[in-house]
Image (cartoon, rainbow, N blue to C red; front, side):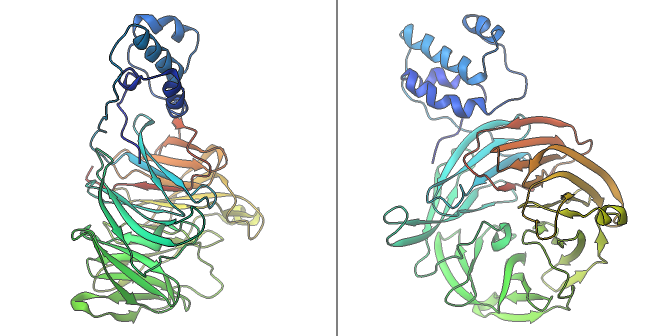
Length: 426
């Protein structure tokens, strides 16, 4: 776990130490390609004119400070309070045993800090911005030996862990990081995680009490969509949703109506708004199912088509890892698409279609200009569209209304895939 960064490169003069330390900071600082920089000191003006990056200029400042005999004791800084535009980028690193999560200010493209994780960590972020967390797994000998599953909860300003909760004899499901295989309850008091073996179950972690609570027996259904502190929904093989109520220490399961047929194959990464209960679930062909989930039940909306008949004839399909995003304030859906062969739905895409979730009307089609694997959108009144490339380890940030690329952040690990945001009041 690393500490938060100051908002300007002058923090290097505080941590100084050696040119080697400055060189280590160079990689992350170079990733911040926008926005306009604060006024540079006179001694670095010539370097700016020569076209140095922010990291190179910061290294020069640190070297000058050391040469002048200025204090070089390390200083731990704090990040600004989170807002709706803070974005978390989880890097599973192509199934590496040790991973990273980067914390970025979407408004500026600055990396605020990072946290470390184990094997296939799963991120969550409290909607009110009060914390972020991850369920993680480590092994005694890095990639073998005794396995430990645990949940870490982080302070969003200091990035220090405020809870470290071990999951005894309750191994979480280790699969490629599917965003809704773990979730927070709407009151932020519990984290729910999925267990596949020895039988399907959902684990409950008490974040307030900082302890593992219990396992809930569930049917052979997948994903977790919380609708209240004690009710969540799961997707079942018959095309229905299972409503799971675990109030009063008991687990009661009922099923909704079947909302899609066997041949209408759903992607593995639906969009879900924890605040509104809206579930947006595209198929491999771009048909989108929607449901409004409450503690009392599920209401299904009429499906909409994201792609035109002409586009479908030209073999346009959704594709990527985190392919869909939902903007709650405007009731808009964002979907990654591109022409592709059948069963290539995990391949990156270069376009996003924007839809009115109520009517299905197409609002925009954005050409991203990059091969993008995952998208998300900030939940403020003037949202940003986040588009992540696992191949180039770069987060591209767009104006969600116009599609204009505003800034980008590169060098984000080895294979970043998951984008997480806070859905705070805007």
